[in-house]
Length: 594
Image (tube, rainbow, N blue to C red; front, side):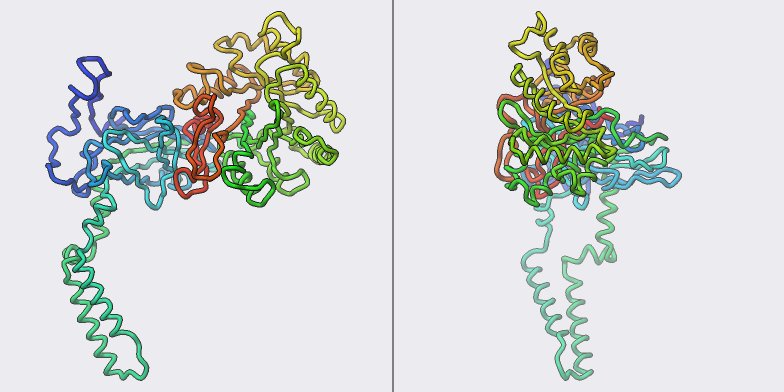
């Protein structure tokens, strides 16, 4: 590992005679030659203006994160894998005249291998600004490749999330490149260097004169045209000697090239290496992970009427966007007593879009809508029968499941599941029903203890549930209890054990709450694999408080831990973009899945 920036890390608060306010001398500014006047970042090396260092994707880089030495970034990835890391930035001084410390420009080169392979910026390499939510780094706002700048604030650390996406067909080998971070002038500072009003007025007059002279007129003689051209030439020469063009005259018109050279000379360079292994992650995830998207939240925030073209477009956009995270999305609408309408495809089974959705190799499982759950009419039942009759003949039917009720609590609710199952089994005997639960049904005498009653749920729901999906909260830290759950299942009848997290479990166990450590976020999927589950469910990815305009502030739902049920944000909250903005937690879910 090559260190290119030596920085002393500050002492821990309360240790060795003080915190970070007193007694810590930042060696990075010793012998500084910045002077006391306004700093021109084009004339000072950026290493004298800001700290730059790299951090892993599991780090929560807070606004008070202390600087570290800058090191060469080395990453390893398979084909069809995404690897990410962070670049942390913290100003040493301010070089802007406004309320910010100053803007920085972040430019990444393509990554190239010795055999000619290339990972292209903007396609395989993306940069995103880590934006705090409730003071915790979480939203990953895309940085515009055409203007890759972010503003730094005095006394605060800011992070940039760098993702490398390796295509399925990428040639294996070592790929190398670099990221250049350069302090630049603000727009207002640049405008301060613009032409004075008197010079702008003189330029305007001269240009207008040229235009008047060269405007074509009918019946002009050749002699008159020559005089006009001569006069125009004189005026243009007069313009070139104006003070505004003095630098260009001295540099033989190479002003822009000189600016680029200056930027290259003052930039902080982060060396980046990626080793691409000679194997490929499968397109279809080996662990089905089904995540909910609230259709009502989309309808409210984007003012969309159910069933309109805009509604279909919005759902389609969300579905396709989430597939990149190795997630199998389902849309959902809740009814009374936790009844749920869950479906993966908004279109009916006989629509061309349906086969496109269900046959997508990135989709590991899909929810079939049980429309009568919300409206038990003859039309809804006929529609359901036709849906099943079409789908059961397709090769992808093995991926299908019905999700009817979220966490049933009593025998009455269990009876509803049994009745629906009996109906579905008349359409096809190989139907799969998923039921989530964290306890046995109240009012029953399944077992003397609460946990034993929980383990006996399969005996109550057999053969009316095939996917028994239990809360990780029940297990706590008792991994040994898994064998008691699995012992009650009948794999010979096609029964599976899946798990889920929601409000619990809480710290220090793995979950996706805001503010948890990155390893906790990433380890949720590790835990599912280690315990032997064959699938995973998460109740919601966009379940924030109701809002009626796209750009409304994101508020987490009352009564839930911050971040619970929210894994991405509407792009309109941060910019004019309509592209969803991923959370840090969603990226860590992808890492756990990979």
